Amino acid sequence: MEITPFRIEVPQAEVDDLRSRLARTRWPEEDLPDVGWSYGIPLTYLRPLAEYWADGFDWRAQEARINSYPQFTTEIGGQRIHFLHVRSKNPDALPLLLIHGWPGSFVEFLNVIEPLSEDFHLVIPSIPGFGFSGPVRRTGWNVLRVAWAFAKLMEGLGYDRYGAQGGDWGSGIAQEIGRVFPEHVVGVHVNMLLTFRPHGVNDLTADELKALETLDHYQKELSGYMHVQRTRPRTVAYGLTDSPVGQLAWIVEKFHDWTDCADVPEDAVDRDQMLTNVSVYWFTGTAGSSAQLYKEQSASWGQQQPTTVPTGVAVFPHDVGTPVRSLADKMIPTIVHWSEFDRGGHFAAMEEPDLLVQDIRKFFGSL
Image 1 (tube, helix red, strand yellow):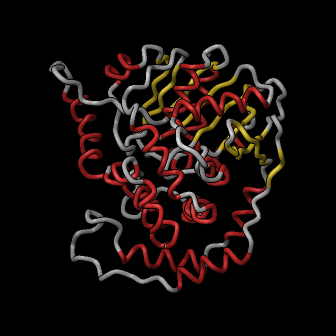
Image 2 (cartoon, one colour):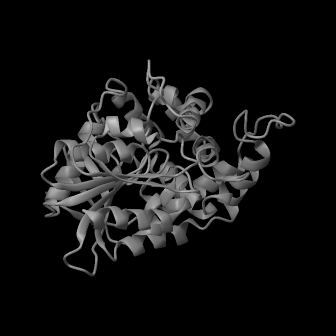
């Protein structure tokens, strides 16, 4: 496997084009009165954020921060894979895959690299179709294929035994790596696990029923993006690839709905880190190819088999759904670690990096 050093160097012309497009945005009508975020992202929030993205946000500073970490690209299965590879000063440290989801990216993990690299050799890839892994050029890149590619990546780096961690799509991919390659995976740690309301089960407690209501709310009110992306990812790509404000709204809404924020996303995550994540989607033009993962996975939705390696689960209360332990144990009999926190949401590495780092250390330290 040939590995090539990589640096992010977005041409100035593309930065200038972004600012020009933002300045020429054609805005919709004013917000409806007294609806808040219930009809979607409010104009009174999005317009000032777009103005900051154009005139206050320093992409070059964020680019330099990312480039301070070793980055590489390789090709696996005909697909370019971009990844960070941060080796621990401890030569005997456990290798650890950190896997992002949608609408995240490797940028999610920037705040946990320093503390985790004290104990782990970190490999942080961009999912094929996302960010600097570039658009996918063919169909078939579902969760299983991504898991295979990341296992091949670890093999190519010389890591025979390693851990895997992730949230959102990263949770499913990490579990699949553990299922398909158990001889290489020490354990799997996830910070998102969905447990669904079972048919014909009537012995759940009041607290368990309340937890399931969070997922019911997500499915009824917050999952419209998912149905679009798993049915017509190419169609939605045109607007998001042409309009930076469209891309901004499509992503930032999730940082409001899925985080532990009181009012605006910046209550939960750093504004510049959030905009860095959006900028990666914009500069790489991967709105459509990242959405394509939903289409590829739709044929096997809900059919993934459980991982067979030791599994740890970190539950953050403002995620898209609160898992029920009794149901989770039936789904994944190898759960050996379960933590429930009183704050944080879907983007745990950005919202509560200290809690996530602590839980990852605790889980893998117990194995």
